[in-house]
Amino acid sequence: MAARTETAEAPQYALEISRLFDAPPGLVFKLWTTPEHLVRWWGPRNFSSTTETLEFREGGRYRHLIHGPDGQTYAMSGIFQEIVEPKRIAFTFSWDEGDFQDRVETLVTVSITAEGDRTRLTFRQESFADIETRDSHIEGWSECLDKLGVYLASN
Image 1 (cartoon, one colour):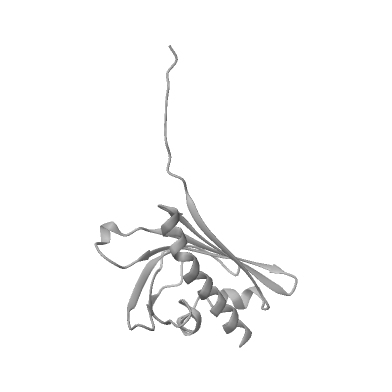
Image 2 (cartoon, rainbow, N blue to C red):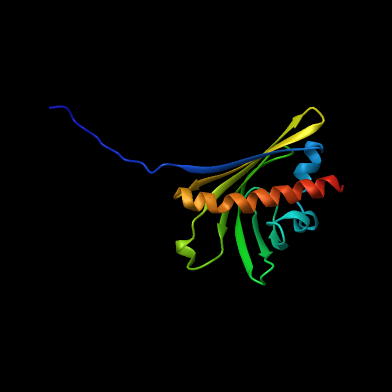
């Protein structure tokens, strides 16, 4: 009788959003690296933001707050895993809610590539436990990147 091994793996749910900006890659990268720029575009439409911590280096921590129009504040934090200027930023992401041990951590990778005189930004967040959790992030990140586009156009 042959030895059998059976495994079942959970599907890996990922969110990917792409935008083409009328700006050079260096500027797009820069707007991810400093609090004075981040607070201008981070968060969904009608949200403002505050950067509490931004240690922009591999192994450095960040903590951002987004403030909703309803007066609620939501905190997120993580650690920078990879920084390749001006091409890529990878960082962990989790909401700072509830018991620390129950927090779900994902990996966000922002890839920045030149396309002629424009810049393609590809945002990828993975792995989500299920489709519903993944889909709950689509609107917020899409609006965030829309705000980044508006801010880029004003610089």
